[in-house]
Length: 190
Image (cartoon, rainbow, N blue to C red; front, side):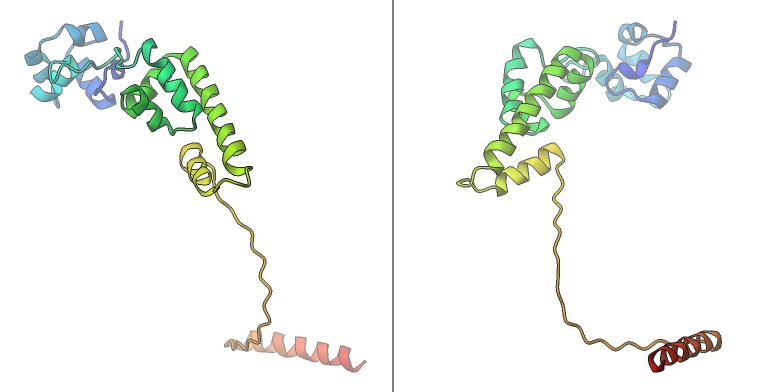
């Protein structure tokens, strides 16, 4: 049975294909291999093999997460204050990619996180934009940088312009222009 080897952290489509060509069909096959066996696979070196097997720096890769249920409250509190997703990750002591990967695989928490972000967004709008005593520039910045709001402005300009332009016309254009001028002159004189 063939599994999606790209589920392993650090393994993309090309490396997954090379692993399959070398006989590694499942994630378990890869995890059971030695560093030397993986390093012998075309396009993989020793450092990549160690990274795939988690032997490089002791950091968990693949399906395990640095984030767990003990961190949920920290992440949700950060989201409710209007922090960016990167800021929410920092609040839990993890990287942005670790938080995103966790959210991708934990649907219940992702829903809670999205609701907390919505409350944080509402707080920025209510407290940061509608309160006359508050400088709105920071709320606008946070909404633009953390919630993808775009600033648009409409400005109306009145101008009294005296402008003369010249255009070079070919023979056909000259004939059309002269005919249009004659028609206008005839209308004015009628």
